[in-house]
Length: 289
Image (cartoon, rainbow, N blue to C red):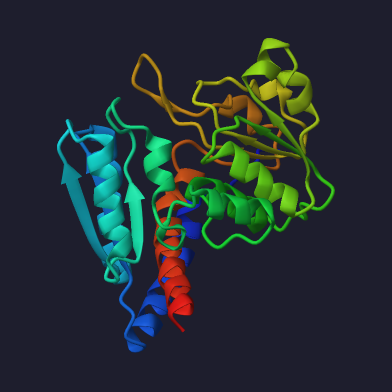
């Protein structure tokens, strides 16, 4: 039997409806959520994301501003710019668009964002709260993957969970969120692959999350019967086709639930960013009281 599709659109619509309601409630209390995206230099992929941010923000009643800095901006200048946004009470959420030019250390600049305005959940404080099981604003794509898994109704408790990929904004936080739900969690990364062990880990996974960026890295025949598969990879093949990290056509005949690519976890990312923006506004309100 073919797997049921785990679609990001219904989750995104549900989140947006909740955000719209919360924004209205905050505005009634005199709090106006706002999101500022900072982009250094031109990048077409980033432009697609900022357009999606603007569209979602407007739909939710959140003020949105894209601040574009020249490509030759120094790290010191960017840090000063972020410090100004941190100090501005009219700004409740800040996001630094990736990629940044080579003269800038992205982590240093992201970590300079005030944690209560860090709507991507990438500062040490927010990542630390995720690790302690007390997240306020978790990284958006990782949270989207987690919430899609929860939406199946399958209890994560005690399940064999395998996360392939250990990036700071997807793999690691996704693994922590699943670990906090008492999944028996294993993380696979480049060293796992170099030892030829990825397949053996994937084969026992009852819940599998893949976020690497290598087309069809995970073969469909490796998927355990009845598994939940969340494929976060988005890759373009030589013939222009968009595919994930998992061999979808074979995997869908073995899994119980699987995300399509596109149309899966990534679809909910921007809606979760809006929810984090509302959470940031609430957090700042708490600090002022």
